[in-house]
Image 1 (tube, rainbow, N blue to C red):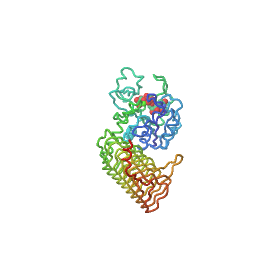
Image 2: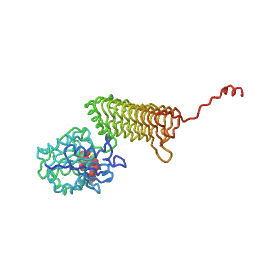
Image 3: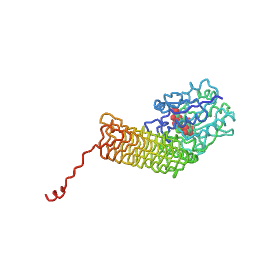
Image 4: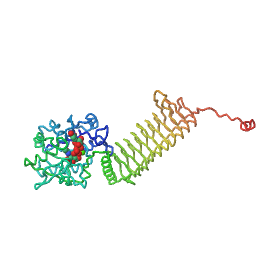
Length: 455
Ligand code: UD1
Ligand code: CA
């Protein structure tokens, strides 16, 4: 049977108090609406239409990699009106449409598939996902009668008895497309909020004698985010899920409650992660790594058996067996080889560092290509910026850079070269030679005694 999905993402999100459209707020590093779109796709619903309105351009941009289509809801006249705006998308289609809200990111594919299954087996015209809440404040209530679900009443329209109902509408539905389209024209905005409610479709279908079902699931999956407090609630639940999945995959988390792993991060088995690590974006961490406390790693690829302590690594790759930190800063575009040592207070920017090279302490390397088996003494600075432009430094294999060297770029240090400590290198250092570029030492004998006797 034909299946498609509509994601509601046109609402204003007033309660977020934000410049950013609500559905673009992130949960574990991914925009809420993208969590929902990805979940639809993972559930087998390929054809996804997103309804945009408030901040439409931003929402389109924020979902641009997802290959979805859009419907525009110019004015936000309610969830029913939003679906009316998707009529063009739905028209002429025979089958089912899953309608999900873009502000409920915790929904899982297993649940969506279960709902589709329930819809198909029960030969329903519509099914809704519900859950039972101790505090149903704010949600639409499921009103059941002798023959199952009768209708949904919004919180603000509830009678005192209806307010006591604890079964709530999650805002997630499956409809038979033709039945849905035939009801949309019958919606009115005669209610407490003056809005066209999608939820009224349920009562209309029921009145027409059509079968409507409701499937109750765990509240966690249905949590709708309307405020920053709920955003943090969703983040916590998703974080726990991600951490559990990683532990099940063979990753040790010393303290899951203080480990922050984004939803797209991949980690291989036997890696150990200490508290305070923040792993973001599209980061991949290999096998058998140890991440000691307090690092942030974003969009980076970390090879097997890497050790990292209290460092920041952005948009870079780190080879197998390398150690980083404590207190290193690896900036975007860096490609660090295998068995490299990047020690304390080392900053590396947009540079390639070859295998087995050691940059042990207090060093800046920017816009450089460094070969393998080199050693950087403490306090080396690659002087890559002349105040106007950035320049490139090239260092061959097996070079020894003495402590406190300046390498004024553009400059090249060839294979097997040595640089004496304290040198400021402005010219090429030929292969196998020693460069000394500093003032010669002068000793003035008896100087201290003479100065003291002058007092
Ligand atoms: C809605 C449901 C309520 C349910 C709750 C679950 C209705 C009338 N009510 O209420 O029964 O318990 O979700 O979270 O549907 N949106 C648009 N266009 C609009 C209005 C909203 O696209 O004109 C989108 C929003 O961006 C959001 C979703 O629809 O993603 C839900 O809107 P929201 O205003 O949060 O509805 P609730 O009041 O939470
Ligand atoms: Ca909501």
